[in-house]
Length: 97
Image (tube, rainbow, N blue to C red; front, top):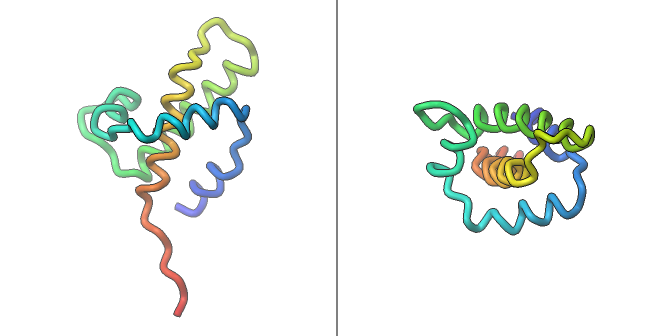
């Protein structure tokens, strides 16, 4: 799990993409949005969802950088919104006493 958090915190994306994703978080509905972004009958746990979302986001980022016509800005923002929201659902490590 720590690897996932480190991987996400290391993402460097254009400021406008990140701002749009942060803005869209308030309307994020896990059941509706995650089901649409991740093909599958059942909703995965946050950790499994993050693995799929990270892979999809990397693919979208590559398309964006290459300027491919298949790139979807809206999908990229939706995936970033889901990434940010799913990270918040991960269990927090307990502090050492």
